[in-house]
Amino acid sequence: MNTFHRIINFCTLLGILVSSSSAINAQSEISFSSETIALPVRVHRFTSEQEARLNCTLSDDEIRQQFEVVNQTWVQAAIVWEIESIVDVVARKPKNFAKAMENPRGTLAKALASNMPRNQLLQKGFNVVIAEDYGHSIGGVFLAKEDGLVFYARKGTKGIQTPAVLAHELGHSLGLPHTIFEKDNNLMMGSGSGRVPKLTKPITASQIMIARLYAMTGKPINPPRVQPPSKSLILVFGILDTNKDDIITLSEVKKKHRPYVIDFFRRASRSAVDSLSRDEWDFIIEQQGQSRQRPQQGRQPQQQNQRAYGPGIVPQMFSRFDANKDDRMTRKEASSQGSLINEYFDKWDSETNGNGILTREEVTARLSDEPAVQGAVSNSKK
Image (cartoon, rainbow, N blue to C red; front, side, top):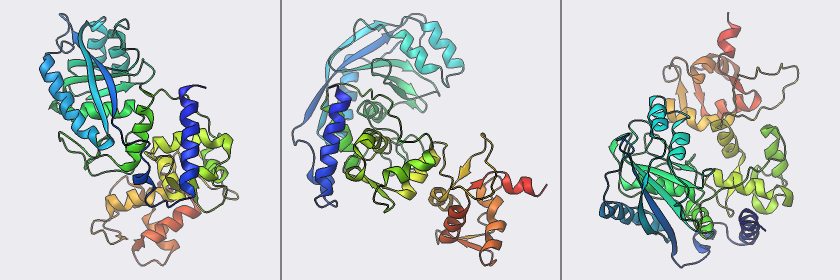
């Protein structure tokens, strides 16, 4: 039995046990173990005479100081990163890096991996590779398919980087994705107005459970792709929600679908003892560029490049455009050019009471009846 399947079995047992107890305090009561998990890390310091941006100038002491601050964040999960050694490695292909930096999107990670020799990796533990300057491209990156390497640099998108960036990338190596719902400067936020530079950052109880679970394996996460029970994500929620209460829990899911649910929960920063509502599911799918479309009699299928929005987009819509936060959208508030609410406001208003105001409930009802497609209303007027 491989590591992933052992994790699936453990999560399944945990989820079923919790479903029979109080769900409110389950997260805090179950921590796998109160003992600190120590994770060995080998730090690889890039050197390069050809490419100054790869040639790391951090000293051994400065690297150790950064890890001390990293551990101030991870103490929340009773996880400590212990430096096994710091070794200098000559970047193998600096020209690849230089070329990738000209257009880093989609190419920089591969270029970094090509520069890292594999003969010095710590086999039973974690490997962090530190460069000098990633410019305005990235702060760091975790590459699960490249021996679980974590790449970091002294300088990143905002200049000299705080150790929180390294703590963030190490979080990815323990199975934590960028957050979808969690804000408030959470460690795993990818971007957003709530993200500000700080030495240490908070993590949630669910994130702690996920991270500790993978930390127990002693190596970076590299989960296999788990297929959903249907190719259509529109139908998946209904398949998984066996008791039809619009909430998915691991205990109710059929055994054959549990690996998919556990991994989907993880990618939503949810642990095995958590649940997902239909609204949360819809929002996640929409964030992934998907949508749940309910078949409408007589409707023509959408073009492949058109994106349909369901009710899961409502919280984001009101958060962005409801200026006074009263859960009521006026025409003036909805007048942002190019926005979905601007395009559909008059249509939805006429379909409700025509009072020039759309409530959160009214927008939710409209999108539940018929998903909205950007440009559909505008094109119909031509």
